[in-house]
Amino acid sequence: MGESTEEVSAPGQVFLFGEHAVVYGQPALATAINVRTDVSGEILDGPKFEVVSEKVGHVEGNIEKKNGKWIISDKGGDVEELSFVTKVTELTFNHVQNARGLKLHIESGLPLGSGLGSSSAVTTATAAAVSSILDEDLEREEIAQLAFDAEIEIQGAASRTGVNVATYGGFLRVLEDERKKLEELSELGLIIGYTGKYANTGELVAGVRARREEKPEIINPMIETIGNITDTGIKALKKDELEKIGVLINANQNLLEGLGVSSPELRTLIKATRDSGAIGAKLTGAGGGGCMIALSPNNREDIVEAIEDENGKAIKAKVGAEGLRY
Image: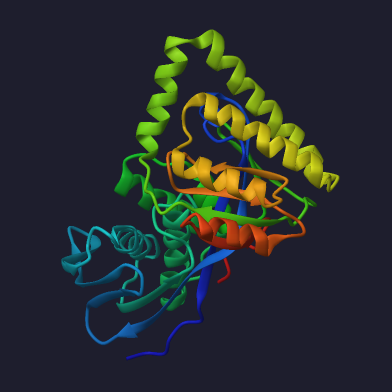
């Protein structure tokens, strides 16, 4: 058995502004958070493959070359739950045209299926870890592409936002196919509240589309206003105008409520955090469950307590965090 690699890690993400509206040509602002997924690994004797994840479980399989391509065959264990890891490993083997027996160890502070980019973080970190173990130096762009390709193969569709945030970190303004990294924005302290409820992103996006088709005269102006909020929020972040950012976060939430993507669990956590002193609180991601964010520069412990009192899980996070470490 060979030496372990240095640990590779990638961040999760939140949307500060613009989710759902971004689907209709409006800008959104996503950012890396300092809650990370760590992947390390070691060479195994023989063509064996193993993944151990404290949260998810484990997978074992065999590495073989079939029809000119490296594959992981005869998989057993938590195969579906760890499919992102096995798929991006196969893609990395084939990209570098090299494969060895491997054991990967995964640890993550990101709740699964929470809208915090857990799949993007683990695919990005795994691609970097596997290439490092094989002594192959990949550029960040190559790693992001491998992670994106894995998400496409597993999910059938994906946005590049998640893997780009996981790879490059910081703040990312997203507009259709354009993704611009923004510098010199405030490193806000956020509290994330996790409802513990899984929500189906595809169903939520389809619901907004149906409402837009039924009442475009109502929904289209709401979507455009969310886009305006995003760009106004970016300007406020550049000037470190926290109170204004809070007002904009609340306005964005009100519009997301109007689009029908909030939930009773999210409303409960949002109200509790505002009542406890948060200057802004909104859902992040698709909605319908998952997570919300609360901006509170001073009384963070009160916000944590408010979330936990409502049976949510509180996660302290800073935005604008570092991207992939490898």
